[in-house]
Image 1 (cartoon, rainbow, N blue to C red):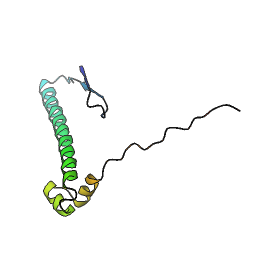
Image 2: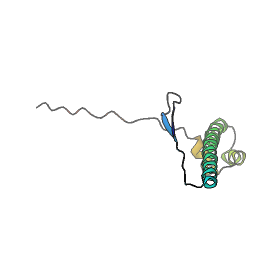
Image 3: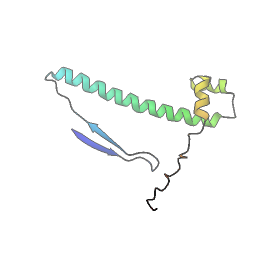
Image 4: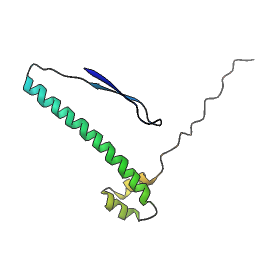
Length: 103
């Protein structure tokens, strides 16, 4: 088993990735399941990249093209384009009020 530490940009959260090797006693089964896990991990990474790039391009197209045209170009629904073009919410939580014990 190996443990990796991934540090991303300052706005992203750090993550820990575990690479666990499973052994069932059947080398063929172990190999196939390992390959499938690796493929699944790659697909998840690719999906995250596609989502990020789609959001970026949808933002660039906002105001330049109608939502319906943007949806066709990006291969998503008009509703999804609208969601993608909304800026992500900023952290607007207020700090908790001080709770003094003075009387």
